[in-house]
Structure formats: structure tokens, C-alpha cells
Image (tube, rainbow, N blue to C red; front, side, top):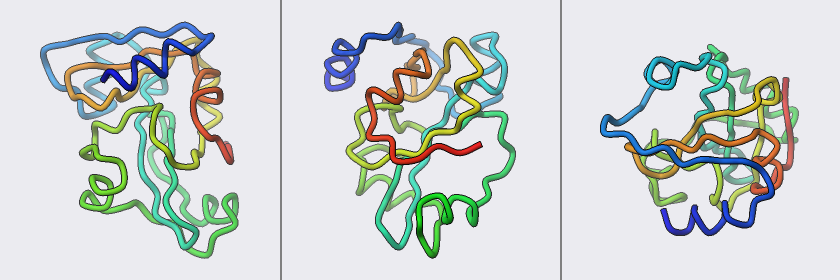
Length: 148
């Protein structure tokens, strides 16, 4: 969490780390707990491709991912979700706890996140959530692609 705090302190955008007693693992839980739209929840996933690993930060209002579209965007032959074991090995975090910033991988952002003043996502800990302006995700990550 200290690494995350250091990264955020260099940020020119508004953010808040919100601590809570109950772990939040689903978009529905996050939406209900914070009283926000599902689309403001921003889970971070790890993609495995033939070109390596990528982070994917998407809007919680997506029900499905089009892996063929992501492959086209990234210029890859194959894209899939990394396994929980791969996620832990690559990031040091468990699935469901991956922070929105601070992962040293190329990043893909969902453009739907920019429809909101703030989005809510991982900090690396199940009992805290990062509330941040979506534009900060561009500044704080190595964004290589966006998608609709």
C-alpha cells in the first residue's frame, strides 16, 4: 500500500483511498457499498497474450469481453485471462485485489470509464478501494491501447 500511496502522491488528479471492514470482490458489491453505478466499478484483470502480459482496466458495466477484438487491438494472435496462479506470479497480487495503478505491465483501458467523474477499483488489499479520476489512469499506467 505504501508503493501505491507514493505513486498517487505524484498524481495531479483527485483520488481517495477508502478503507472498509468488509472485503469487496464483485462489481455488484462495490456498486451497492459505495452507492455508485455499476459502470463506475473498475476491476483490473491480467491478460495473457502471445506478446506477453497486459493489465486491463474495464468498466463494471461490461458483461462480456471480446477477446478477438482485444487481440486485434493489441496485434496479438491470442488473448485470454491469465490464470490465478499466473496473476499472483506476475503481479504479486491475488485475483480480485489487483491495484488499478502500480503494475509494471502495458495497460489497456476501457473508454467507458471516462463517462464518470470518478471510478472505483483495487488497491492491492481487499479492505480498501481506490476512488480516482479516470484520466489519472492514463497518467499513472503505461497505456498502450483503449477500447470501446
